Amino acid sequence: MTPKLLFRRVAVAEAITWALLLFGMFLKYVTETTELGVRIFGMLHGVVFIAYGLVAIATWVNQKWSLRTGLMSLVSAVPPFATILFDRSAESAGQLEGPWRFAVGGESPSSLPERLLAWLTRNPALAAVVGVVAVAGLTGAALFVGPPASGS
Image 1 (cartoon, rainbow, N blue to C red):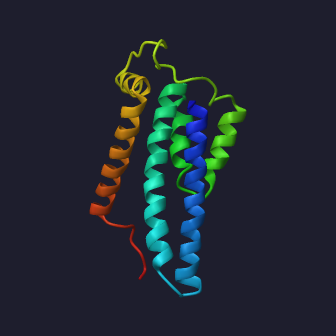
Image 2 (tube, rainbow, N blue to C red; image 1 turned 90 degrees about the vertical axis):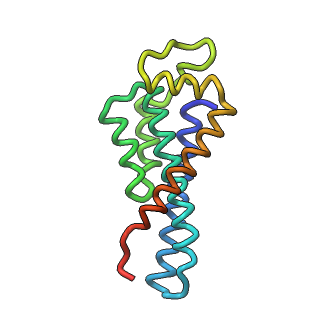
Image 3 (cartoon, rainbow, N blue to C red; image 1 turned 45 degrees about the vertical axis):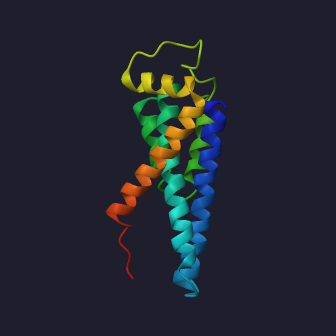
């Protein structure tokens, strides 16, 4: 899977979970019928939000994005559906093209983030496990800290 394809899939998933969360909020606050949508879709969105952030950082390192572009990729997860807008913008600027730079037979990493990304891209099965563990750990930490403050 290329950086572009992975980034796009997670960016779209992040936007879809935003839509589901907004639907849940509509049910809770407008129709006042149930909080279940916010609970379920809020958790789902939180998990995908974290996954998007990790994929955005990996793509940032791989694509050698500028600080501005990298930060914009992360900030785009905050407003609803902005990850799709960022993805389209990055694609039109050619910022998602190419393979994983550090895959077997690829470039040699020179920094700590590049060495970590090289290890992950050279061990895709382990990378998937590390990704799941990282998302689960960060989700657990977020749950420990507590949900965003709410009015009810």
